[in-house]
Image (cartoon, rainbow, N blue to C red):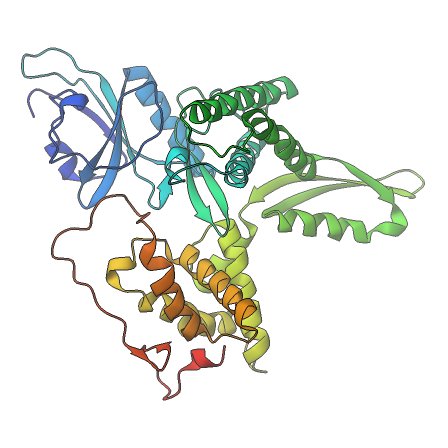
Length: 435
């Protein structure tokens, strides 16, 4: 690396200095480059290795790199799902002293993929709808905090699997603006129209390349973001009036919001002069209701739908094995120690990159349910785990990254004994044969 650099960084990793910043990004040697799928971008974006992690590097202008870096950090502080900004590097020059574009460095989001990489052959209508629904939820969360995106699209979003659905993460914030007074209806509708047009165009592009199912209608799918967004927005921010004798509807509204994955910090409740009508409106809504409950009880960090599914299994475990002197936290500790962690440990090392633990556990529960349906009996978790690993997981592609594991990786086989996966246990009898 020649010349002087101006680095603004959220990390203190000296390895950042070892990358060839004096070389145009498009000419970097393969030893630095990570072979990951990426979405469409108006800027040159490449993935690189940094201290055992993967980073995304985008060449852009000084102002755009600095502005996007600050915006991503602000969105992170507001708990908005987005990529992790690491550094802005300016004052780059090549070996001859000629200026090179500034770059924004972000951390690659593990187990995430651009929408084009989420299907192997053709995009099915139900998958496209789930992607659009995830993007609608992200857009609602952004609008609630007063953020105008300005370039809403599938390409500017990364997706992670979330218990049969997808969770959307904002990738590109260079056109975004945060308004402290919130967004007007016109600004929200502008973002929605941008989303509708961009999504239709992206799906039509796939259609022209023969990469969508014959039954997929790009216009219908893109219009779906309008309906999904407005339903969510109305539920989160809409006013509701009812008779004072129906005060149970306050709890019903709260329960509906919790079911959608939102917590309510404050409710605005008013009655009329005669006390016959009650009006309520959520004042502050915050996403991640099930995520926070699961994290509080178990320490397991998961997506919202994954957390909901894991909590259901925890509740089922508690109902089966509850003890009079055990509270909710103690039962959750037992579930983690006796159910969740043994399942995760049982996955061979060469398969651990296939799915993140929470998604793997969800898919195991799904596989167990299908096996029970087919065989007409309750399937022990150990039996379902063996079948899932050998029949499903082993044939999936890695989603942590799409990079081959380093040479020298050791594969540890699973010891199979009478149809169940052997793990360490304090008791002689495998507890999973009972659940």
